[in-house]
Each structure stands twice: as C-alpha cells, then as structure tokens.
Length: 401
Ligand SMILES: [Cu+2]
Image 1 (cartoon, rainbow, N blue to C red):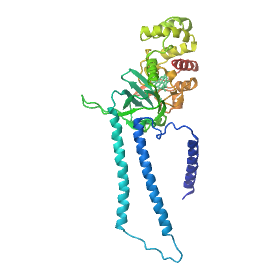
Image 2: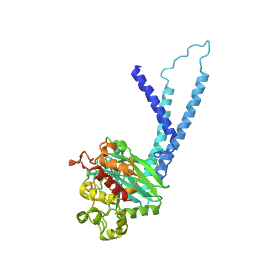
Image 3: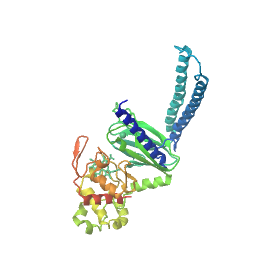
C-alpha cells in the first residue's frame, strides 16, 4: 500500500474517532429516528426494532457456530492438513437459501409498513399543508386557514395532518426524522386536462409537543446541506394563537394611521402603503403609535417599501408586500431561525443575511448588497443597501413578532 493511501486511512480513522467523540458527548439528538413522536414514526421504528433483534439473533447464532468451529477444529500437534472441500452442493444451497430467507423476512414487514403509512390518510378531516420545496428553503401553505409561512412549520399536537409535497424546481426530500419520512418532493409534471397531477403525500399525527429538526434529504444543489427546517408541534390552543397572530398584521407592519409624520417626514407617510384593510390599520394603531416611536423601526419599514425592492420576492400579511419568489416574512420576529434553519434569528444574523446571503448559503437565490441574482431568467440587481439601511431593515423585520 502506498504511503499516501496509508495516510488517508490514518486520517480517516482519527476523523471518525473525533466525530464519534463529538457525537457521543452531545446530549441532544434533534435528528434521531429512534425517538419517534408520530404514528408514522412508530411504524418505521417498530420495523427497525424488529429487524434489529432478528439481526442480533443471527449474530448470536453465527458467533456460537464460529466459536464451536474454532475450538472443535483447531490445529493440533501432529495433525495432517485437512482435505479442502470443493463444490459441496449441500453447503452451496444452504448459504444461498438462508440469506434469501433472511432478506424475505425483512422485505415482507417493510412493504407492509409502507402500506401502513399510506393507510394513515384514512384519518378523517386532516389539517392539510401544501409543502413546496425550493432551492434552498421550504414554503408552507395551509389552504384551509389561508396561512402561508416558511421554514418553520407549525402543527397542532393530536390532530392528523396531511402534507402535500411538491417542488418548485428540482427533486427535494422532506425529512423530519422524529416525525417519520423521508418522502420525495417532486416537481409537478404536466398532466392531461382533468387529471390530478401526481404528488406525494405524508400523513401523521404528532403525539408530543416540541421542536423537531428536519433536513432536505435529496441532493438538490450546492446549498442542499443548508436546506433545513423546523417543525413546531404545539397544543391546539397555542396553534390557534399562532394562526390568529399570523392573520393579524403586526403592530409595526404598517405605518400608524397618523402621528408618524414627525419622524419619517410628511411626504414619506403619504407615499407609504396603507394597511390592507382599514379596520386592521385601526386595530393596530394604538399599539403602533407606541412602537413607531422607535425611529429605527419606522426607518426599516421605509427602506423595505420605498428604498429597496424586497416586495418583489417577499410577502408580509396585512401589508402590500406580495412577492412569492422568496419566503413569506409575516411575523418574522417570532421565528427561531433564518435561512431555512441555518442561523439563529437575531439582529446581527439578520443584518448579515440581508447584506450577504451567500456568505451563509452559497447559491441562495436572493440578491446581496453587492451582487445580483438571476431567478428563472430574470436578473435582480444588487440591493446596494448601506449599513444604516440594513440595520433598520433588520430591526423592523424583527419587530414583527
Ligand atoms: Cu435539497
């Protein structure tokens, strides 16, 4: 073996040892499959446990036989060399048939398990979510609720859910190990009129509240490994509260109906977008008057709507921002993470993301302050935002909790 190859293996050994040590020291296993919290997860987990014990049994049989053979047929002093065996038909058949039987014994419950996961759809009245995977983030739309969010999927505990999986570009795979899966997220192929396009669905009921980590599990491009997600499983009440909060424009989402002129300049106010509904604006106005006191936040709103073109790609509920190319940013301040689970959501990281998204995620389809992006043949120029504008933008986005 050449020295380079030896070195390669030696390095590999130390790297593996290091990795094991790090993993072994961790206290949390957010992407473990062996603590399932859904009916779907339990199906695959039972299968895993069953196969595990069967293989342990096989291991025991092999170990006992091996030990017996080693002892019984060990070399003894003065013994002749044993005769080699050629073409023993009985043996050949045995070591073909036995492994085949083992494979069949694993395949049968596996296939049954797959069908079982599809029978979960017979649950009545599931909460439907349209999941769209895009390079390199996730969109979640709840058609029954009229809610759209991104990267952090809120689900109520104890209610059956049905995720309709669809890709906006290449093949992705939706995988939240503790919930079960994974399942491919395919582009929708055109079908003859009147026919339903074929899509994959994922059905489960979550049994335990918690935050579950997920990951795109099908290579989809350079930032594939940075395409994470979180599932926030919460009580029915907490979920309803979240839906209500989403539907209500955040107090700082829109300019106060009056009284902000002194801060942003009278001209700016009249040109700034009004609330989508007058009632929403009125409802928000009491709290707004107070929140808008912070000139940084008011300034951020101004940059978002008037000094940049974020609205071409992003939507915020209750404001005129309509974009659908990028994630829906409604109540961004209440999210735990940014950029599909990659960064903790705080002022510093948000500024970094807006200034230079590709420093976080190579290939991100969002323009930076200094570089453009081309999306489906259309070029979006650099945003050219300066530090002051970026700081204000981040403060405003975070103010909408
Ligand atoms: Cu992917």
